[in-house]
Amino acid sequence: MTTLAPVGSPNAPDAIKDLIGIGIGPFNLSIAALLDSMPKMNAVFFDQKPEFVWHAGLMFPGSILQTSFLKDLVTPVLPTSSHSFVNYLVEQKRFYDFMAGRFTGVSRTEFSSYMAWVAHRLPSTRWDSGVREVGFDGEAFLVELDNGLKNRARNLSVATGMKPNKPDWAAPHIGPTCFHASDYLHRAASFSGKRVSVIGGGQTGAEIVLDLLTAPGREPAQVSWISNLPRFSPLEEGGFVDQVFTPGYVSTYQTLPQLGKRSEIAGQKLASDGLTPATIDALYEEIYRR
Image 1 (cartoon, rainbow, N blue to C red):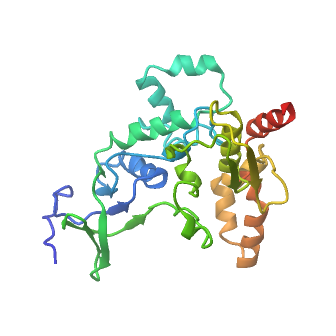
Image 2: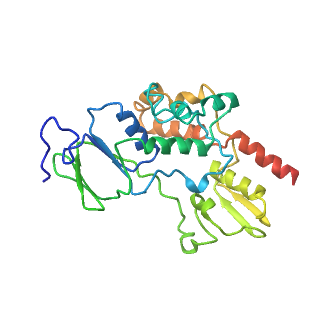
Image 3: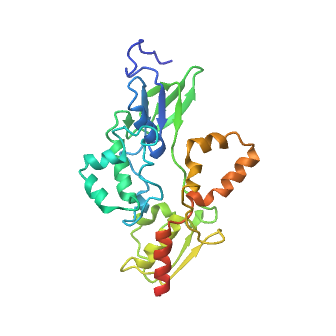
């Protein structure tokens, strides 16, 4: 068993941590940024990647976030945090230019740059630190890294992200001509003159179809957009819709019976999983011109 550090030295290398986070994506990064304002909290976050990366294969230049920039890593909980998106703009000397633009939303590339800025300025983040094994010794979680180092913590936050959904029928064909959308921009192969099928009717599918139809020099002979949804529907927006993201709603939701929770989730789908109206309009205009 690891020897505990003496009382009064919470940040000693062998001290039992208050929290260990596995994975440094938006969720754990938000926790890390908020805990940075609590110096008595001893927390560390591990990620196997060498640096922060967020949807690199889908960073279309014109993609706009579907949520307000005020819903950043910290502002709803701690609006005075130095890790806010607004402070990022100030630090990058972009605040006045951003305000003058009167943008309806923030680009995905800029928000990714903001999160990377936060991720690499926090003292609690550890890169090139893959986690090999997690156990529990009866008192604390034991987290062993790929390099053999071990850490103990009273609490564990696992946020390793979702795995790409690759249907069983597609598995034997994965390769240059069959791949998950998350790899789209990493593929060097030209689609020029080929028949391309895009499976998935969400925002990602819409952005890929729009890119296929408008990217110069590699226009396919045919694009098929396939979805199990009844229609390509826009994101539901507005003050009443956004109530589902408030703390009060979440507290009430947690009191519902299981069937009630399922019904609520089913009714909320387009609150977070619909298509951005600007993307739908751009797609329709492109199809209409054709």
